[in-house]
Image (cartoon, rainbow, N blue to C red):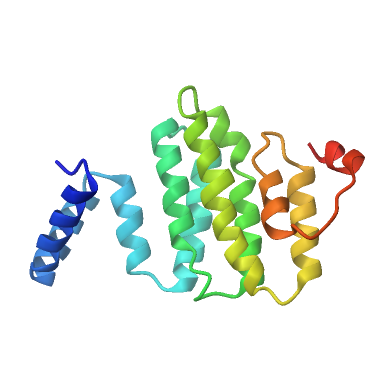
Length: 181
């Protein structure tokens, strides 16, 4: 089992020595048993346009299918991995991240035991990805308006961190900030 960083590093070093065919076969075997592995492999072999479509399909599934909390959480993580800020238009990436944040209600509704983990995905992982796109976007008004919209529609308290991360120089009056929460 891989339980520690040392175990991970040892396994990684051994896997690097394997033939590509062995690794491909192992990944494809996992695809047959795991939806998460299927998403990972599909995103690895897809173009940017295909990953955008897969991202949207994944979010649709999170919002409309009864996946259970663990698979929902895993699919949200995989969805974030599908977006590469270096390979796509920043404005498009921000719009996709807005779609990601619009899944928070369905995700939290699916969870009885993993609220903390869902919070990490939205407030930490999602914010980091959103921030990458925001830094690359030349249209700062678009970024500001998008953040304002997302924060104003925040029912679970996961989006306010976007404001703090992306627009830290913006002074928000207490009454306005309270109206957003």
